[in-house]
Image 1 (tube, helix red, strand yellow):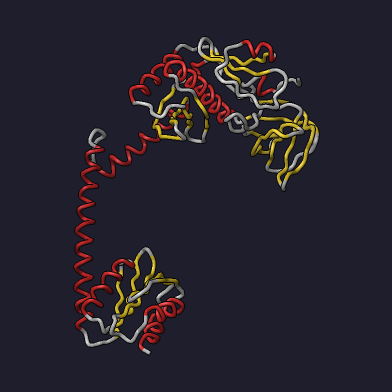
Image 2 (cartoon, helix red, strand yellow; image 1 turned 180 degrees about the vertical axis):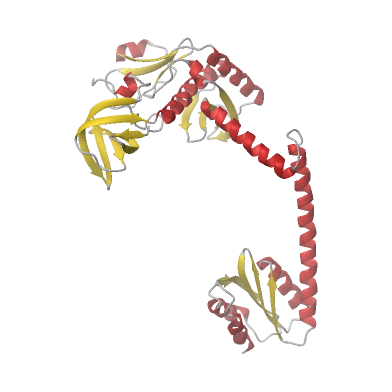
Length: 392
């Protein structure tokens, strides 16, 4: 077996002097394959590291048949190379990945919930557990067990074993690909967990710092559990505190009263919206009555600050009161420009024929059947032309 890369031998190493053995390009993307690397390639649920090679930013790291490809912002030549790791990103991944091992081990040991998958996202992480339901009380207990293990500063170590040694060990997960041959890499949290893994990990559980469990959701007959660990917990707390401060200022209330004040404001807003809908309905009914009582056979009206629904209300009331009339109704609001062609059963206008032609004049699209054709217009500048069409 070839010697493991530096990221595996020394996961805390952030700089490395090496050689670019291969330089190439794939689909217009330049890459380099160094003889050794401190940058972890994507795999096993852990994202690829970032960093630089000879000062050129590394945008991705992937395993390939010819080696570990470091995709770059610009090409480099074969020869001496200085690699530098984005340590902040790496340490975050080490915190999340080690926390996942700990969380999964405690979940299966104390609750019988085996982890079926793991995802390390940019903002949050999740594991899928093979249980259809997780109670709030159980999550509290699991979080406390995890916190206790973090405080215990348990050693975390990686090692390689032979296939024979591997077969004799009690391993939590045996996630080896079918094509795997040779030694097996194991990651062990002392006294709690041993599992196969190729990722980078912390030296002790104390470096996880903290872990907070979040929401759960049903997933493929099991349960997906979201969580944060390490620096992400502090970052999320700071984010929530900043958001709460803005809300307290906007709502002019204290933290303990924030939810009650927000609920009261929402209730008042909903009441105002209901009142506004009633007023709009009454306004539509009144406008339809005025239009129906007028002498014109072709009704022409434009409304500001309303949408297509308002035009429909006016049209329905108009035709109910004046079946011999036809109408061109338009409106403009922050949602756009709208038009409607309507005609009663005693009118000479056929909306299914005139409507598409009006839509074409206004540069819009629409549809409908029966007495109403409606749509959205690109502009109402040609409104007079559309009205002239209907007058014919």
